[in-house]
Image 1: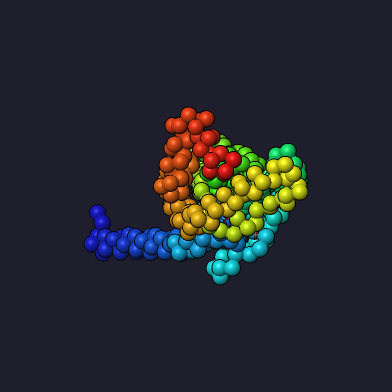
Image 2: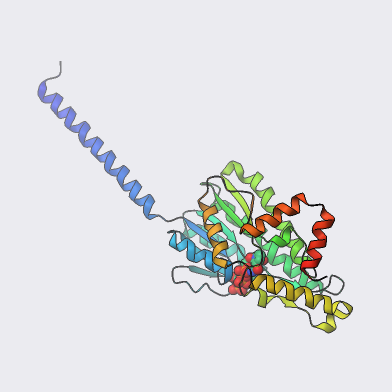
Length: 297
Ligand SMILES: NC(=O)c1ccc[n+]([C@@H]2O[C@H](COP(=O)([O-])OP(=O)(O)OC[C@H]3O[C@@H](n4cnc5c(N)ncnc54)[C@H](OP(=O)(O)O)[C@@H]3O)[C@@H](O)[C@H]2O)c1
């Protein structure tokens, strides 16, 4: 039979062990709270990517950017890379992944657009466009996965309403965004068992410097199409500069990163949601007629 002295000793030892376990658990929680989730944005030097970085810093994420010029926000760590040069992009993502314990999310914002007729567009230009808008995203996804698979994560690809509806004389852009949407859906199916969800965010025209970076061919290169190219390009520029605020798109992206079950795709703003719905229910010929009107064709 246990003596009262031994019983007291045993109870004290058990209590000490429990206190130790509790202290370890508290320390673990404090550490987990301190370790911020890392989000990698490709293209946070301006526009939607920049606004997304700003918002994510506000939500206490550790934000890392890859672009050719740096993101000017003090709390963003920059890595310089051109997404069209696979080796530099992959190397930057490997370095980021090895430094952070894991990458929680990838937001791919890099984009390029051009205005030229299909007949005369330079293959170098439309191949470059696909490198930035589509293959760059593909490379970024493939490179980030080793650092995301263990704990799960979120991938957001910034697509466009142009992936749902054609943009006259920017057909290469529309085609690249439609391809990106399909990549997002396929990747979401493949990666769901790793708790990695993929969403394509489809902004409509958004007021950023994107409009002014568009590669527009001079009239002499567009030949007999020139006046129609100019009308379409002007209509597109008006739509963008009078359109969404980049901060609105950024808020949607930030919300997606926190969702348990994010959608496969999402349009930004009531008007674009309505257009997407109309595009699904209207006869295609009517929808294309409206589209031609929109771009003055
Ligand atoms: N603005 C709109 O009306 C609109 C509408 C729908 C969808 N979108 C899409 O939204 C995304 C963001 O566009 P935005 O309006 O925010 O344009 P933006 O201000 O021009 O931002 C584009 C970002 O992509 C980066 N980028 C471009 N080419 C790159 C390359 N070769 N290598 C690395 N980074 C590159 C740029 O960084 P560096 O130049 O420093 O490399 C910049 O950070 C794009 O995918 C665009 O297609 C825009």
